[in-house]
Amino acid sequence: MSSRQAQGTTLFTALLVLVGIGVVVQLWLLAASVDALMRHQGSTAVHATIGSGIVFAVNGLLVLYVFNFDRKIKQDHN
Amino acid sequence: MSDEKDKNPGECFECKKKQDARWRQDFPVGWESDNYVTRREMVKFLALGSLTIAGANAVVAGLPHLVKASELPRTRVALASSIPIGGSKLFSYPTEEDPCILVRQGNGDLVAYSQVCTHLSCAVIHNEKENALFCPCHHGYFSVDEGRPYAGPPTRPLPRIKLEQQGNEVFAVGVEVS
Image (cartoon, rainbow over all chains, first blue to last red; front, side, top):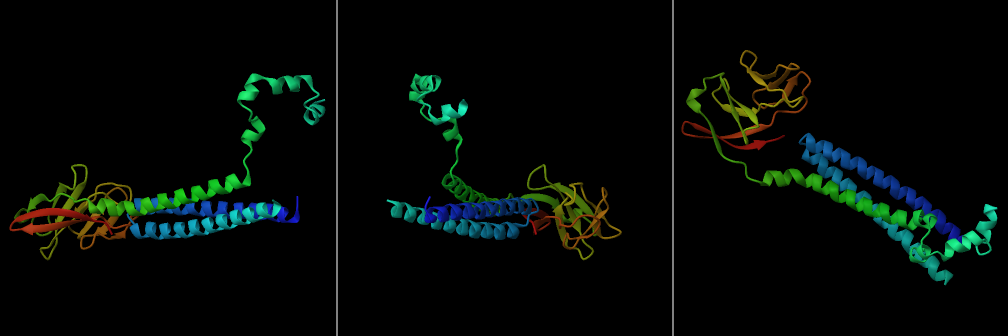
C-alpha cells in the first residue's frame, strides 16, 4: 500500500466517522421535530429541518470530497 | 491443517471438490465476501440515510401546514342568548370526538377552547368563582381570557376555537393552536 493509499484509507475512516456523527445528530433532530409536532410547536420542527438540511449538506460535501480523492488515487495508480 | 487449506486450496482434495461443486459455479460469492462491507459502501449508505432523515424531517415540519390548509367545518354550537354571563356550554368541534367548552366572560364576550387538558388529556371544566378553566385531575388552571395555564402541571395553552356570531347564533369556524 502506497503512502497515498494509506492516507486515503485514513481519510475514508475519518470521514466515515464524521458522517456517522452527522447522521446521529440528524436522528436527534428528527426525534425533536416529532416531539415538537406532538406539542403543536411548528416553529421548532422547521428549525430542526433547517439544521438537518445543513448537516445533510455538510455530509454530502464530505462524501463528494472523499470520492473525488478516491478517484484521483485510482487515476494515479493506473 | 486448516491453515494449509487456506494457503493452498488447490492442493486440498476437499477444497477442490468444493470449488468444483455445481452450486459454487452458480453462486460464486462466498459468505465472507458477501458479508464484507467496504468503507465506500458504508459512506454511501450513511449519505443516503442522511438524505432520508433530512426528507423525513421536512415532512414532519410540513405536516401541520398541510393539516391547517384543509378546511375545518363551520358548525353551529349554541344560541348566544342561552349562555348567561359566567355560564358555559359544552360542544364538540371539529368532530364528535373533540370536546370543547364555550364560556361567556364577565364582559359578555364568548370564548371557546378545547376541553382536553394539555397535561394528560382530562376534561377541563369552567370554574366560575375563579374565572378559570380548571382540570380536576391534577389541579391545573387555565385563564379564560387566553387559555394560558397559570397554575398546576400544564405548560401549554388550550387550543382556542375560533368563533363567529351571526345574530343570536354562534358558529365554530376553526381551531387555533398556539
